[in-house]
Length: 544
Image (cartoon, rainbow, N blue to C red; front, side, top):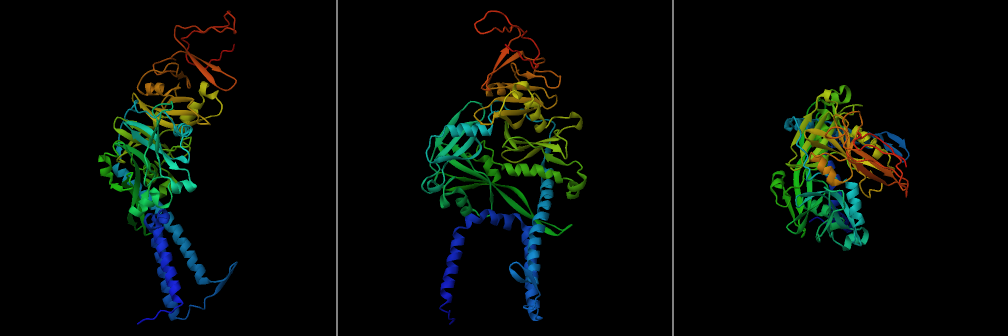
């Protein structure tokens, strides 16, 4: 019978208690554990090599009397054996090499996967004017916050949810931190219609057993980690279905691959794993990518992870190999930079459903559109439209500059551009640029910039924007920017008078083709000046 020293009993009990506690709180370490043990197999590989070297040194060194006689290095912490310094250096090297090389191998492997599945198209589908995205996220959130009448609750997240066939910005009604996160449950969600520039807010209540903003075991991340640990969970969004509210959480998994040259190493490749749906009672149902498309709860929703779609398109920078990406840059693309808080991809809705759209520019200083990618928001299937170099189409960054130079926009103070979304109308590509006050209190203008000619059309309402996308002319919307036609149907749609007030607000008056402008002093009857209504829509200023 083996006897255990009495002094060892507390140590054993404390160790068991510590292990039990670590096991209980393992969801807290889930992101780090996944990153280290699943997403970075190269790091594990080289740490394993270092561990084997350490074991070999210990066994061989003990046999030959090396251990305990090592030379020391003087450090701030005192004298440290050289072998400790050497193995510490090897551990750091393993982390750097494993992570760096693994990232390069992964990008090239992802590029190959995307290249093998992408479909090249000759045109893009027309943007659906009925479900057009005209309200920027910053304004939608401001609308929702200004209407929030729930003490102890806050808006959490910010994603896109299709409600009754119409896309909305969705925000969870989460407990507002501290004690509230322990005592309260997620109360529901706020949905802001993104197809109108007016405030159209729908708040739907429903208590979540497991949800956002809730503490410890009631938090959705805790529940998902307990449910299935080895997954890379992405941003959640609230989905209404049959009078109930569900929390949908897409997730990514990683396949391991081995590459022998130039450095033999394991690496991972990300792929869409599926969607976990949390019911109001806290139960979790997993849907594979194929099942998610057929699911009634997820019908019409864009479930493919945004970050994965962006990463897959960006990985095409490695389509000709790592060395080409580093040095030659032949046929290398890069995702175009965009202003505002939201970055690519942008979600647009066509007749076929939600799609993510990403604009790619040639590597370097070039700012024209090189390729336009669409990724199916449900399946992740990519399509690519490559433009001839002779087309010289504007990219989103340059289109934003053109929009900000329009007379009625350049006069405004404290406004910023946001969300330059690609729009296809009558087979032509436009950049739909939102001009937003810095307070995000509303929307000043929506500018449509023709990517081919730089002709710009500005509107102030969501209905006018949807009418333009649907093929209608824009009244008073033409603004010559390059000397070309100033309206969608030829010369300008009429003179536009912009009245600027001292408080910074403006008022636009559209003059018809048969109208005459008469400017009189207040209370007077004399005509100070007139202008024909059929003038072209260039910048004009009338002072009275």
